Length: 326
Image (cartoon, rainbow, N blue to C red):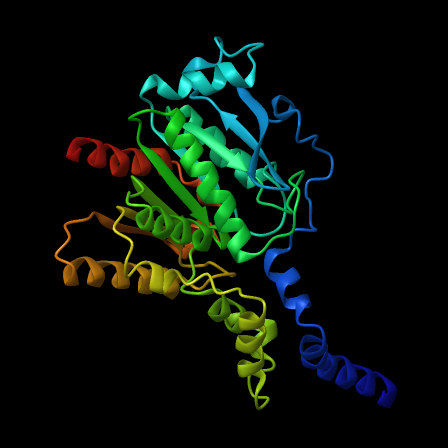
């Protein structure tokens, strides 16, 4: 009994010590890029898991190549048979909206809930882009906040250039919400505005998610633990400040959050909505800001938004309203 208790105490104390001595550990936990699930999918052959989809690669900067899947609107599935990526690229000028999905941490673009979302959006008539950031899946490089944002910005600009006047929307989920708002702010710095932003399961900033995790809460009473976490994040240059980004972002915004989210607390989504509404008020902007909260009894948790039978309708109304304003 004493040995077991001694082991548990040692294990408990070793966590903050390990984080202090090896701050890179927290970065690996945040990005979880080494969890390349599912292992059984050949990312170069998306047709094995997702119809009317092609795979290609974009060099987002020197030495970094990211794997991308382009899924066509389902209505074009017959015409897509046997076509190459160049043919897919030319279809972007067909006037259908384009959604670039920025996934959360862990896994690849072939993860189940990401595939299901792509199927729903494709069936609703959208072009869907799913790509793996640097270090994820078959993409080269190592992940960092700056790197992920660079990848997303490059993909956005590439898609925007190919799609002519079509509406292009960034959809960021979980960690991807931070990538999405970072990217939207970067686009504004370039003198433009992202047509629309959708955030599902978004957080205020990454440090607050970490400290709200049940495992982290076990250490919050230890003097200096919270400061240790923030200092490590600063050392790793990992912030993902959605709360600050929304104070300047002027893109129309739709937030999706489940009340039973067990990864990112629902109240963070509510806070982001209020920040965005307040920012629009202060800047005298009439920008559409909307939030859909899913009741806990639905069981959507953190990543099951694709189970909402009305998801495509909700997204459609949001994007259609923007098209009418143009």
